[in-house]
Length: 280
Image 1 (cartoon, one colour):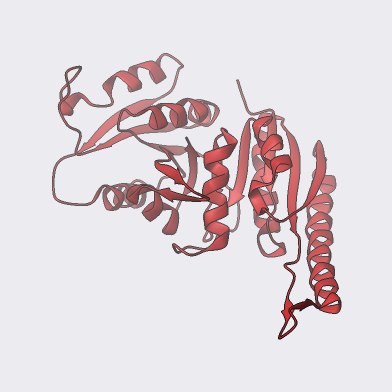
Image 2: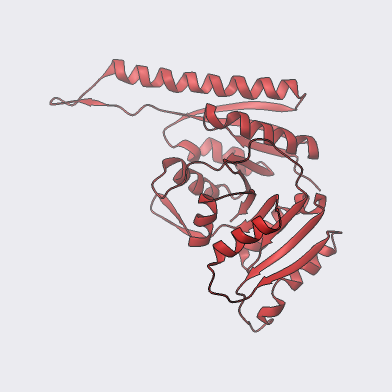
């Protein structure tokens, strides 16, 4: 089992090199086909007061800039892919909806794994809002690359943030190819509560047993109730254990056009230190 079709979200020239390099490394590991995708934004129409007449020259200038960015992104992606002998294709879409264009979401739904840059942090970041909504809509696992990581490296140590939820289960099994290839996988629970099925102290034991049947070297660790926020506990564990990949569910609800992620998810998105695979 492995990832056979990768969709690389190439948002801007600034992040194209980083995302393509990481995608190449994963494609080589799993002998995967890579789709490079870029959404070219349709220029918003500026109005000239007091008549509110569209300014054609400004509109054209903005559109030309957007197209030049598309050409720059495509050139970088093609050059790297050809140099590495990668099975690849390029797709660009002219859209006013960014990541959430129907064509881009259709491409994601036909892929095993979506790869994207972390993006700008902050509640009001347009890029972050689009990325979160894309994760909500695509139905596919998304591997996010932290801004601080410039070069890919082998994924040897994996941390699974486990709370027994549907989202966590989905993310864990979506990450199975990475887990099977890793040296160690740690199931990490934070302040697990007692349930009718199991005690808090045993949380994560059953999923660990399931992964072990796949031949995965897995351990279970629990963070006891200490007053530390779950996001902080996960961040501390990532640092203490030199984790290469964090696997976790994405939590939140779609309200109107925006995606409001749960507090733990959003905090970790803003302060990523390791590759993060998220599913919903």
